[in-house]
Length: 68
Image (cartoon, rainbow, N blue to C red; front, top):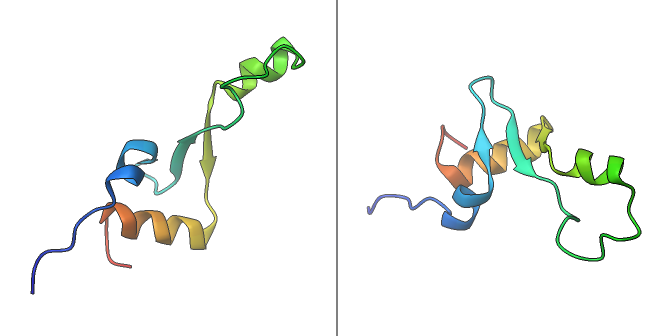
């Protein structure tokens, strides 16, 4: 049986913290920015975390960090 391959696109987009949370970049900062307030744009630049069990489990499986 060959080794499992990690999902390369997920590897570039996601990062797992030592506590098990998933860090990702927020969407909505590419174009059409003129109608958004500076406060909103500042907050969108920060990394978003998620602790949802299902999403975390799938992300860990895609990155091969632990068993599914």
